[in-house]
Length: 436
Image (cartoon, rainbow, N blue to C red; front, side, top):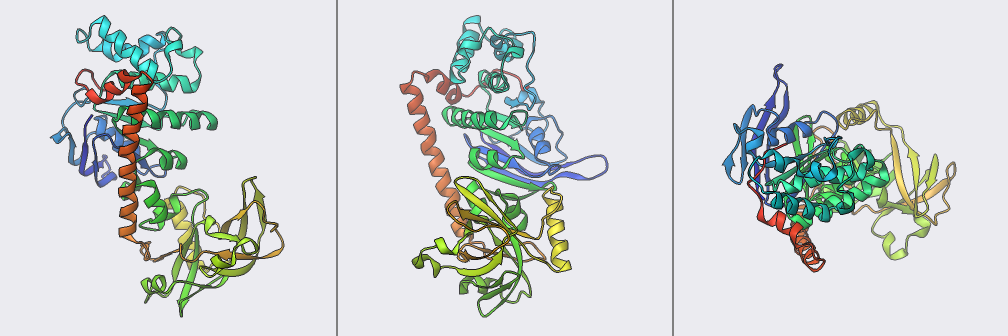
């Protein structure tokens, strides 16, 4: 295992365009980091720079404190798990997993190879498939074989390049769980590239959000969700995404297209001097006013609106409210949509309603909004004016403590279930094989 340090990394191509621009990240030993962002944001390029498949134009890359900028991929002792599995169709599962050990000729006895392969197969529940060929496996099983090959290499870190994008939704869910449990059990440093919201929010200890080659924010998933640093992060993280509503502030009231909304005085003060702000509201901050308890009502505002339609999902439902923005605000929403690789951000508010709500499209309804949780953004700079940096840092620190506890618990469970070998593979680290 190893720590990985990115100091002001830059990658420029022949035309001078910076695909990665001045990115600095400290990845702790055993940490699981997610790189996320829209297409073309530089996340895969950054991963390839770490493994050595892309040259570094400027900056320093350190593995366990040692500069590796000029080291070949095989000398960095990192294992890469690719999107397309990269399995050899003519080899059995056993031989596919053993391949990197065979490649390091003379370094492993047949007994050592067998031990490492069987331990990895046991960890990934592939023991019954060792003599099968990749063509006879499901997509999820093939991905586990690719991960097994990374495990036996006893690499200092795992690098994942969108490994689940070829799987269907159900298999992705299963593999997310398996990757998470495996990483906790092995305690191996991992860097994982994805464009999938759910993977980013459920897998990582911290998530790095990239936009046009620049790091926007790196924090725990919860900090990103609750305390985004700017408009881009707020809009990119979360599904359905955060609603953005233009407003002016007067006497602690937000004057919006939905009506006047009371706002806590401390939030209003953060936007003092701003002619117009963008109000950021997550869908779950709304509710059918008829279903809100009286004791809770005082913490928000109610307004009347006509929903265009509702979508009932069983456990909850979504409602949609259109509003008419000014040309300036419409242009701002369009620019934000382009940044997030979306076609457009429609001037529409998405609200989450209790499944029991009888609100339906085409009828006026009374909606309640929890104004304690909304954010106010500067429409010119995108800055989150109401971000509480201290509260955000506390969320990430809490996540770090939980991660340490989960790793300890995973190893204890592993030992009690007789899988000490798999855990030992991660604890010992390794110095044996070449990078993929």
